[in-house]
Length: 261
Image: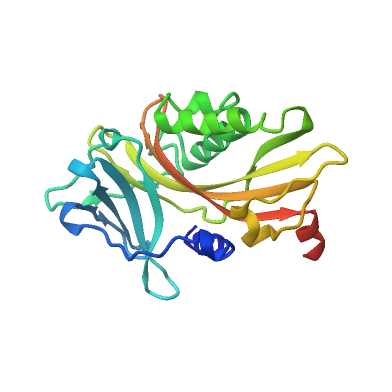
């Protein structure tokens, strides 16, 4: 996602590029959650950072050690719609959090694959198949459904837009036990958006797409989005809550780029 940001910016005309401003997190207002891990497990921890007046805005970060390089990298960053939705993380007597395997129904009512499918369904159908069944209504899930509702009709009678799931490039998930016995789960998903217009018409790439598409017109474009998502998940049957997500366009293909490839 970060690489995509840089690529997109470099594809803009120089006059449209925003000047880079160094930034950092305010460690004084950050909450760190370090789980106890068994030997051989990947080492990682979660952090919640705050910004804005009275720390209005919250972001969940996952930092993990990479096995090959032994370097620590931030592998997920999710902006929360409302910091009040952030659950209380369970801590033991020594202040450590408890890692949860979110891939198993033994630990969570909705495993991460179910969450990922439901998130993608919010974009693909407006949540009609699984999205609304898995997730309770929240600002985050409502925004995803709104993306579907607003986008599929953007061409009117001149074309179509379809969202589809894609194989996630980053299948790992990170979960912590919460005080209510559930889990806070952070995961990634990938989805595509295919825009196509009627015969005889072509789509002109938006300036934000030119890093991938150049300026060539095409009767269709397929965009790939990589996203980080955060959800609270119960252990007993019940709906999960999507509390935030962050997406970036990470690829795009059209007729000319497909032929070039």
